[in-house]
Length: 336
Ligand code: AMP
Ligand code: P6P
Image 1: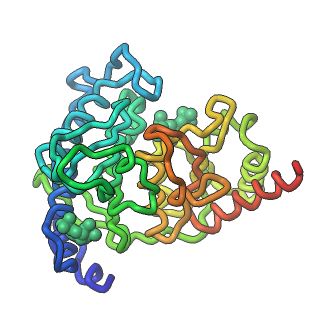
Image 2: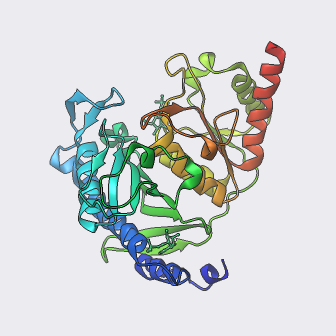
């Protein structure tokens, strides 16, 4: 951690990655290259997003994704870009993507890493110029190198992540990631084509006054969550809900707050995806001093049974997540 303090704001992402690698004498450079591959794809996707309105790209395709939503053209472009970058980099044997029903084998059978990715979360916001994001997780494969990755490689619990990060394409484009030694944010300077360290060692406030949930669904929220929302109003907290997970998460990470997507009548298992949305954000928030729960347990302790499985998510400031769980526990005690 001391080494992180030695890296000043303005350090380039490349230099930061190399300095971190130096802390691991046995490192071969594969993870460093993987992180650079993600950064490269990010720069290309960022350009596509910024030009989308001009190129008429945002229109939607007719066919459905695994999520049963219309696949935005940009979703597809982003998916292709990230998978191509990871395939060409050589370090990743298998990718799990929000945009593909099945595992994507890259052909890098000697690659020792697995990547789970949501290439463009919240992409339905593209048409109205609202911030959207990419979310990614990196795991070490558990199967022997020399063949394609296996389902067991891809259904590891979030606590096994080697690295996790997100990109927010907002008023500026930022890459925020962790490898288990703190969370650092890098801001993209398009004129130079470089990411620069802008938010070293991000720490999220233990308590905040922002709550994020879709109150349009409140009547179908569990009673404990409804009670917590009433508590927030009594405390005169601020309701902020962009409808773009990465944007809501990023604001709450920096300012303090809690994001809640509980089970609802439309989503009895929750809406968000464990493997390529929640696990990465859960690792990041814990590294920043916050918490991530599904209402009854730690997100990072959940062992996935399906690549696209959904989970309820309560994530953000430690004391606020605890409070939501307190209200939910009271509810279940009353129901007994
Ligand atoms: P490698 O042999 O390059 O895949 O690295 C082996 C392990 O060292 C990785 O799985 C990480 O735990 C750690 N490591 C290597 N490079 C880095 C880096 N740039 N940043 C953080 N951790 C790293
Ligand atoms: P709702 C976007 O589709 C997403 O997966 C997240 O980015 C966002 O927080 C959530 O769903 C919004 O869902 O049901 O409130 O529109």
